Length: 220
Image (cartoon, rainbow, N blue to C red; front, side):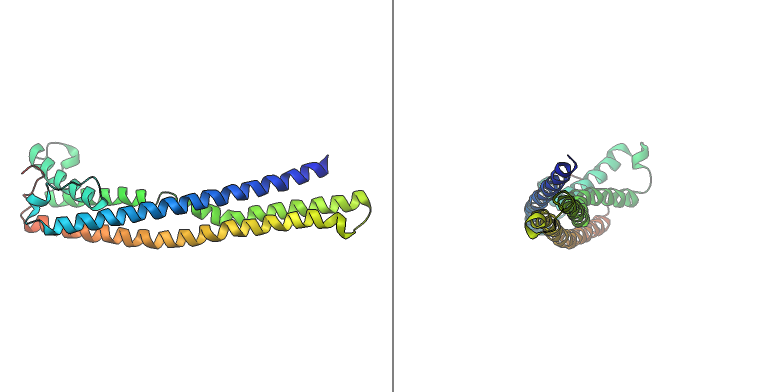
């Protein structure tokens, strides 16, 4: 009964590692598509935004389809809300430049969270898969030792199967960890690059708003 349980544990470990691998590749394809889509929409919005004659014209552009557009939209809305509410609520307390900067920073933080979705899971799979595989290897070796004890023989035909199965768990654990780690590092660099682009745009938007006298609103 104990030998049967050991074999089951190794098989469960193998399926867990296969599940890790499937999750990893699902995240990789999803993140690659997401980042590609975000970059394309940001480029399109940036081209249209900088081609506008002034901030009032830029405020009329579609904003929800890109991260840069949402940042600009938050900026325009902050300017509008400050003027419409004349600083009567706590959220809009302070000078208008501080309110605008805070609004832009908050939106950048939201966009960053969207970009980082799935990265923690990739990191977890990359760091734990080898240990899960090692766990299966240890149980496989225990199973092999039990087989030796039961047969009172250490012949190759008795130990080859359990030991081979145990080594497979280590190999699959490493195979699941490598793409997860590589994808995590790759996407982390891409996210840092995208975040820097958002920061640059927000800074430029803030400076343009200050230069224009902080008078641009989304409805004017």
